Amino acid sequence: MKRRHFAALAGAALTAPAVLAQDRTIRILVGFPPGGSADVIARLLAQKMAASLNQTVIVDNKPGAAGRLVLGELKRAAPDGQTLVLSPSGAMVIAPWLYSNIGYDPIKDFTPVARIVTFDFAVTAGPAAPQGDLKSVLAWLKANPGKANYATSGAGTVPHFAGLLLSQAAGVPLTHVAYRGGAPAAQDLVGGQIPLMVDTASETIEHHKAGKVRIVAVTGEQRSRALPDVPTLKEQGINMAADAFFGLYGPPGMAADVVARLDRAVADALRQPDVQERIQGFGLVPSHASGAALAATQAAHLKRWEAPIKASGFKAE
Image 1 (tube, one colour):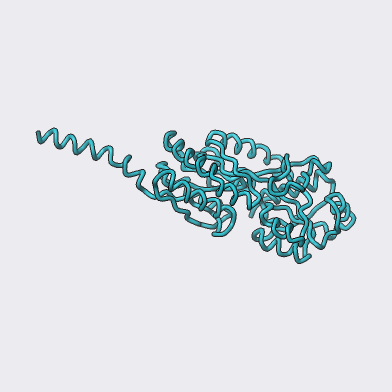
Image 2 (image 1 turned 135 degrees about the horizontal axis):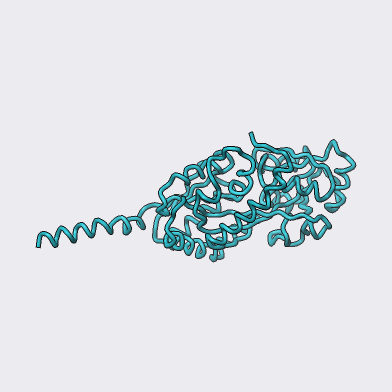
């Protein structure tokens, strides 16, 4: 009897961690300060996933190194599904080509869980540029090379290289001016200190609606749902497109059933109308895809950006 009793206790002890794991808090790490699009998306996910999983889900903001700092922490985390990162694609597909020792392998060191959103970029003209469509603005910039500058939220970002591709495709030499974030860049655009900005639509869409600036093009293959009246670059005769995404990642070596459970919770969250409305308000597109699909998208973007980044000669400090 005693032996059977101890055997039963031992069996319970072995199964306890799997049961308790569902009661532990899930952390979604965000490598940016509160208030930005990454933070808002993570908090929307956390709220909805908590209800779906019947588990506490919190957002942990750890800004640093343009979102790369949290990836170092994720790489070292236990593969139990309790630590995740919501990452913009730049840290996964741009940064690896910029840094000689980035500290992680974007393919081998993480487990893709789900794609969350996709988005393209807005080309916005400020009051320092002449009125008219994109072609008129580009013609003016070409005729005034000393003023042919474009702002972005930072050096080494997707908008930085999207601007370089635009410059090449349009045949207009443009000089990149890097700001420490989209808000100060938009402020100078509105104030007339710089004529052009290339960045996420969320940075300038409210100024555009207020008539302070003009979004003259979007960089996607199709028009943005948030800006249906704004034509794409290709519609205006410039053969260039650029887009990006946010993905949810876990540490390496996560079990398939854990990934599937988290992915289902993400899919449930992104189907909810209030989540879709809030995300679309940032000029982003709710675009759920599985971890396998996220991995394929990431690999394609990593390959796509290699040549233009290397050709630019830009090296991160």
